[in-house]
Length: 510
Ligand code: GLC
Ligand code: CA
Image 1 (cartoon, rainbow, N blue to C red):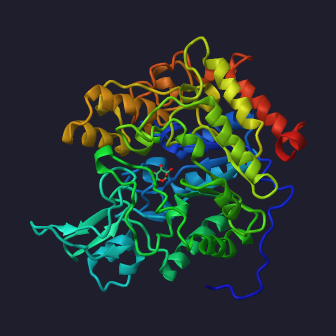
Image 2 (image 1 turned 180 degrees about the horizontal axis):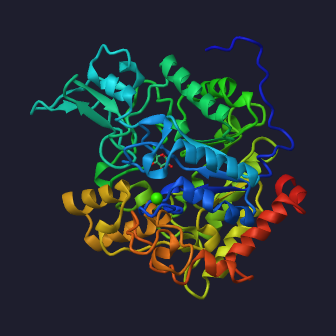
Image 3 (image 1 turned 30 degrees about the vertical axis):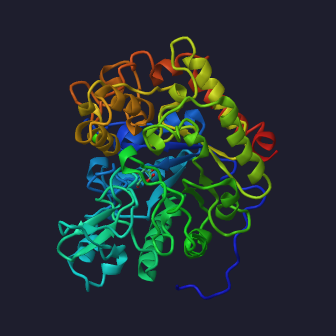
């Protein structure tokens, strides 16, 4: 790597602006549609910055806005240096960034570096021939052998996060490539120094542009385990689909995080948060320790697994069993006490991959929705760590139940339904839909409900949004909570104000 001068590992001890921050996650496709084409966009975000400033947050984590064929709503990037046309232009981006800064709001980008889109020029080159200079940008392996019918056998039994094998056969060059997510999301080969250099210079390009940090997507699976051993938890019958421990936190992950930090983040005053599933509180001390020179904080998944059923007939995240409140408390407590004094944590109930918290851990009936949303907010914001609010959480937005799979947009849910109901007939329509109602990612992705007008004010009347609005928008929307001084919105506003103001010493540092 370029840097051979003496390097002082940054210390994250003591007071830091990102410890005192409150972050708001924007999922751009579903936030606000300014030009009336049914899709949320950058101008729509700029328009709502005064609303976010009123809530009191001071950082936005922006889910990916880069050019993408949208197989995974932007988490499949085909050009790291361009804005997806659905969302607008680079000028719209610059305007949003500048206006956010004027409001005292920083912007975190989403760094999707475990994989690219299969339409990224690197992958097009890579798959074109075995001796192409970009071949080694991705993970290609020979088949383990061939079955009786002459079909190639994948190098190991790994399952994709979205169902089915994690290996895709490429007829033209006679090898498999690895994709932990959709087959249109080939995994990058971080072992290749050129890949790392290209990624680091891309990160610097955005930081030079003035963005304030990154959320690092699926970052703890960039280093694959040596020898690519089989995963004992794979069970295609159950549609296993959670990142297994055998793939997570490979041996090179920490050296690479130190290298990435040295080559990029340490040169700027920015904030970083890594998405790390299958990671324990002890691991977190390496990832986000005050003196390890890696990330500022990570998102762990332990509390997101509390309502999984390890013994059910579905695998991982699609399974469901009622959770015990004492178990949820134990998990949160464990993270609080293990990290205290050693590493910084992040606090979240929701994101674009998880069901809505008021439906999941609260009670979304008319009687208790407001009360339980406030209670969950209070619990979260009084713990140590940097809190994240997911769009619509401050309105008490709930899960959704569409009757037909046709109304769902997330490929993960659609594949699950096809695999379990249509292809293998292991679940009835009702059973498959029930799992999607409880765990599906589209619960979080229905449009933000701004007011009681058509489309909840997300898109103008007469436009059909890319995914339907939750039919409860006439009752649950931003206009309504802003008009009610006792609302969930103002409860969040108070918590944020206390954390960033009068109670900072107690809520952030004590
Ligand atoms: C992360 C994202 C998720 C995406 C996946 C693949 O888990 O949060 O939305 O599908 O990575 O990029
Ligand atoms: Ca739009």
